[in-house]
Structure formats: C-alpha cells, structure tokens
Image (cartoon, rainbow, N blue to C red):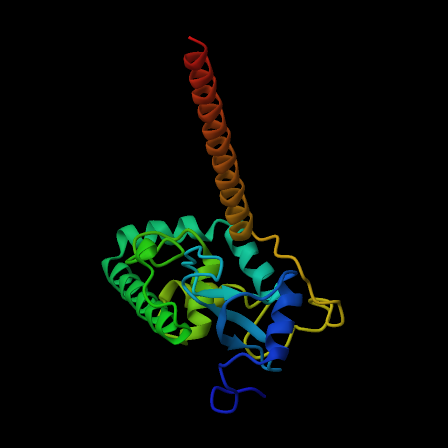
Length: 232
C-alpha cells in the first residue's frame, strides 16, 4: 500500500504517462503528484500556476483519475454545491474554516510557483479556485485540495470526499478499467486553456496581417502621390 512516507511527490515519467492517459492529453507543467491511489497511480496533479504557454493556471490541484472525477461530478449534479453555499451563508464557523482553506490554497500555490521556477503570477494573485473563499463553484477543486493537503484543511472538500464513498474511497483501488493503460500516449492538447491560447494566437496573427496590409496600402498611396507630384 502507498503511504506518504514511502512515495515521493516528484512525478516520474511513468506518473506523467499515466496522467496523460487518464486525461486523454499530454501531461503539462506538473510539479508534484498531489495524491495517489493506494496502488500508487496519480489521483491529483499539482500544476504550476503559469503554464509553459504563458497562460495563468489557478487550479493548482487538478483531479486526474477518471473514477474519482466522475464520482465528484455526480455530487455536483445532485445539487450539493447549492446546499454548501447556503450553509456558508448561515454558518460563521464553517465560513471561517473555508476562508482558512482559501489561504492555505494560496500558500501552496506560491510554494509550487517557487518550486517550478514560475514564481508569482500577478493575474491570479489572491484568487484561489473553486469559488473560495465565499462560494462553492467546483467540487473537483475542493476534493483535489483535500486529497493533497490531507483531512482537516478544507472542510467542504472533506465532506465531498465522504459524499462519494459509494463510488470511490481512499482505501480501494479503482484503477482497473478506469482508463486504457496501454493506449498510445496522447500527443495533442485539446484542453480549454490551449484552445484559448490558440484563439489568442490566431487573433494576434490576424492583427499583424491587418497591420501589414495597412502599411502596404499607405506605402502604395504615398508612392502614387509622389508619382502624381512628379508629373505636375
């Protein structure tokens, strides 16, 4: 059985290959394996706060295991986030604990930023993830945080983990059949963040083409004016 004392958080090539197959895209900018299945496979990828493409990435603790991700999605579909948001409004103690979880998330992101060499990312400074510190917008974020930090840090993440016990628990391996362990490694990143960067790059190319066309038109007009001036 895997324990914190006998497995390094530093991702091996096998870890990165497993994460790529779990997600169906290349593993990117992973600094640590935040949590592991009892068999040793990754559950959570701890990701640099700025991707190598330059895009800020606030989700430091990213769920990768398909069974776990699916189980959390069931909780979201069942309306648990609405219930949690109502409790945050009514329960001052819970709200204080949740804010402390937010601060812990920020501190961990700063640690990962330093460890990765990325440093601070001003665009997401003070912004954690998942709706913290005032709301719950993504249970996947909270569960990833709880699994990586351990029990007692994120109260709502801990509750969500208890809530998915019907489909996933820390003590039981659910890796068999959860993804294709022998599939070719994905070589194209089709994630939302990469698509956003591709759109931005495309817009920049369009802008440069327009600029070049305008410059050519201006040069042509100036040349025409000079020719006309010479004829007069």
